[in-house]
Figure 1 (tube, one colour):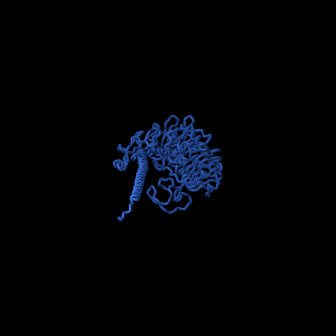
Figure 2 (cartoon, rainbow, N blue to C red):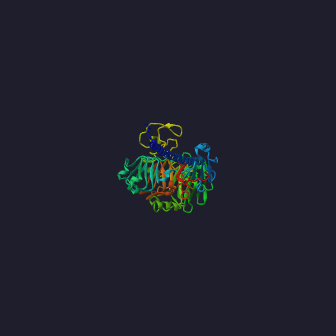
Figure 3 (cartoon, one colour):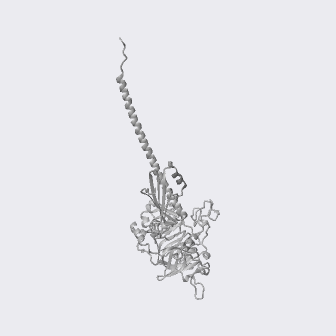
Length: 554
């Protein structure tokens, strides 16, 4: 019998089939994994390209903004691109030359949407990396006015509202504590870098019990905030840039009394650098665009126009100062619903709007009267006792200890005093004789100041009064705003921005904010009134948005 080897053919076939099936599945799995991996890799590259395109567009926009800051483009419309060699960002040129980098091109356009507003630009940037395109846009404003003008009352120190008869229709802000007493009415925001206080004791907005009424008192959680950032005050220690602007066009920049131009851009009378201005209904004071008077200004009466008067000395407001063709103030715009307020702004674009940027102080009333001196100079809050920067402390707060840490000032000296007005000089309390009094020496340096029949300078009491009640305009000083309102009621239409406030009134005092100057309108060419207000920075960026990818020229 011959032995036979067992036959395993069917098992081998089954095993082979299993191996083939597993191998096939593995192949499919590997192929699928490779496909998924490839898709994931492509997706990852796509995301990287998508992000890179945005960064390149953002860099192009930033380059354009810096170019605007350095020197405004020569024409209304400018176009720059990497491929054209006109977008000089070295890294972009390098990336565009390397295929591995994927950057195809980037471009940016700079457009002035309104020729009447040459400091507002619409900047659009686009970039392409491989097949991904991103496009962004922003409004750039060159030399924007400081946001301190967003408030009816701004203090670069302590804010004080003591009196039940004070009413504010608009936002209020201080660069340190804001103190209230006797329940004034506040219809607007209250922001303080320090704390909100009642009679020098901090209050908690969450407590629901506020030392003021109005909309702020009704909703303190939303409208009252301590610890707000400080806002930098523009520095007018040098007004040379405003002189340059004013002197550039003496036809449109200036001051008129009725039809007669009395200042052509800049008051250039060396012996009389100041000027005396009185406006009437028939012959109002016309202030147009940017104008500079290097000395003191004495002003009262009717004023009209759109513009900012920069005062190199102090501003003496000798009587009521009111708009000839002002807005309708029957309802304060900041107390309206937002749509109604915006309509008020749009409807009053042509109404008078005048600002005063004052390097020295603002004195309202007859500074030579006993009444003014007793209320605005001698009291504890008066100019004789407020203003000495050597006692402000390093934190800027009067009466608080210094931290004894010296720092470098603009004049190259080191000390621990607080330079509140940012001019590099330690200010002392006001000296009545040299800083305030309108004596014959000061008056003689003011062009147009009244004289007696014998040619001598008239007493200031003959041209000024404490019995005034209304101011219209935007008033800025980084020193003191000292006012004696002797009328039965007093009102300011516009805003008061100052470091020290010495406002004394009789019965009521009301601030009504002029919404036309708010920064919410500064990027809207249809609503922006270019006053040439004091600036705190070279650029403001607003309306930043991403647009539908624009692949043109890419």
